[in-house]
Image (tube, rainbow, N blue to C red; front, side):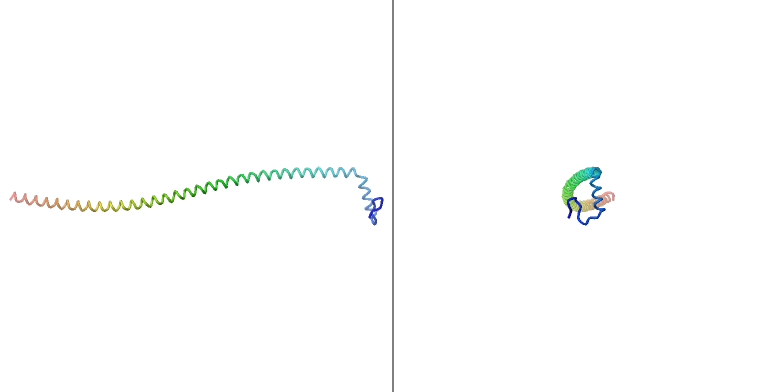
Length: 141
């Protein structure tokens, strides 16, 4: 508890003296407080600038992320289109392979039938040549 003079009971002489010096040098304290206040103001301004920088960077990063997400979505759609086209082309290729196989079989059948016709014609030609030789031999005999 303090008495009328502002000195607390049981305070030592050093504490009282220190308190009196501080009150006597009030103007020095004001300068010290002003300096501390200015330092704090400067620090606050630096923090505001840092915060603004971080907010700007974050905004840019969010924009970049959104752009990448849109591009990824567009790429996904393009991938799905390409997969559909690939399946369609595979189906076309499968059908063409079947058609080529059928045409190849038809061509083989045609070639075989032509081979048989050629064989028959050769036999007829040989028979005709034989008959001609026989007739020539009869005529020359």
